[in-house]
Amino acid sequence: MASLCGKVALNVARRNALCGSRRFATKVTMGDPVEHSTGLEKREYLSKIAGNENPFDLKVIKRGAGTKGQPNEIPSAFDARLVGCICEEEATNVTWMWLHKGQPRRCECGHWFNLVQKAPL
Ligand SMILES: [Zn+2]
Image (cartoon, rainbow, N blue to C red; front, side, top):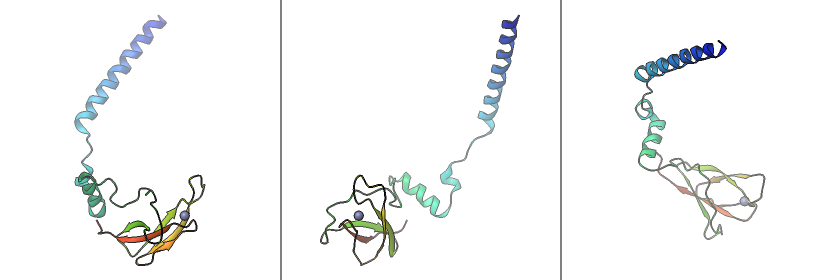
């Protein structure tokens, strides 16, 4: 008798789950976020659709030579940008510094950084 009750309960639960999923699949849908977004968010979506996965240059950049004559170039659409340098590979902290347009700057570790103008989105 106990096993029969278990089967009945299981069938009722399966039927409810099936009805529930059919109901939501036909009535509730989410709109396309590109159509709902506006302003800067929309430009970000359009840029990603066009193939630029990093429109604001927020991903970590691997340092190059970083000498005074060949500094690491940091893109920015503004006159200044906050830059974090992971001076050593095993470092547990980040050295932060403001980088201003036309003023290359040297980090404590000796690497040079230069702000490069970039067109805004
Ligand atoms: Zn550094």
